[in-house]
Image 1: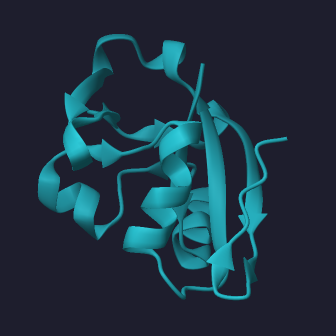
Image 2: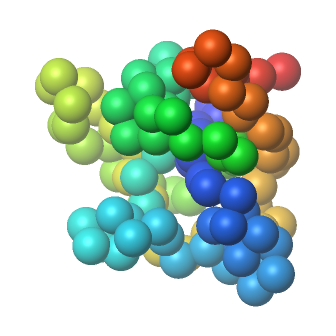
Length: 110
C-alpha cells in the first residue's frame, strides 16, 4: 500500500540534496512525519496547502516502515499514517508535481 507525503518545492529540493527527510515544520513540532492515504491526500492538500504552488507528492511504501509507521486517529476520526523516523530519499517510490489548476491541486497517483 502506498502512502503520500505532500512537500513544498523547497522541502523536496532539500530532501534530494541531503538524502534524508526529517520532516516539515509541523512534523518536527508533532514528533512524527504526517502522511496521507490516497483517499485523504486531496483533503490534506486543500486544508493545509491551499493556494500554494510548486508542491510535490511523494509516494512511500507503507509496508517498508514496519513499527515506525503508526495509524492514528486524526481529522474526522479517520486513521492517518504517521511515520516516527526520518525517511531516506531511496525510500521514495515516486514523486510527482501537484499543479495548481483553478485554485485546486491536481494529484496524479499514476
